[in-house]
Image (cartoon, rainbow, N blue to C red; front, side, top):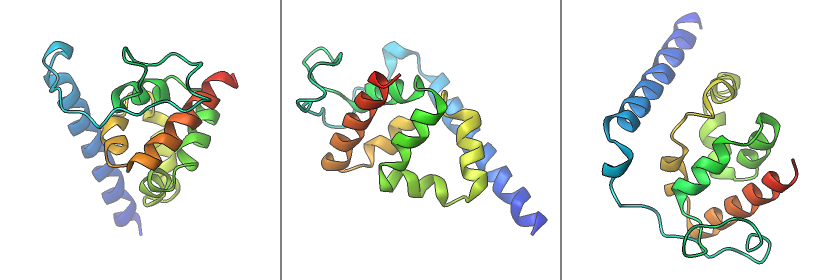
Length: 133
């Protein structure tokens, strides 16, 4: 069992290192323009600050997620089954790792993997969490 835990921690730290290196390797001006399709805001999200064209994209959702306080962040992640499952796949250590790194972790990649309905749900939950502070 200790070998399994140490292997898991090693994998998690490797993932964190790779995502950090990838994020730091390109300056913001050279970041590829490939992004998830922009989402039209719902009526509840229209009152919030949206992107230039009135739409949320995955990079903006990532930034908004990273700026939430931990309890609200966790509630948002738990409300999207695909994102919750990706954290819980590592058991309690997954949530410990996320809590320690959620403000710098590259959530955009996870958001890009969601379908449009899940992205819309995530955008709504982020909006609600931001305004519940």
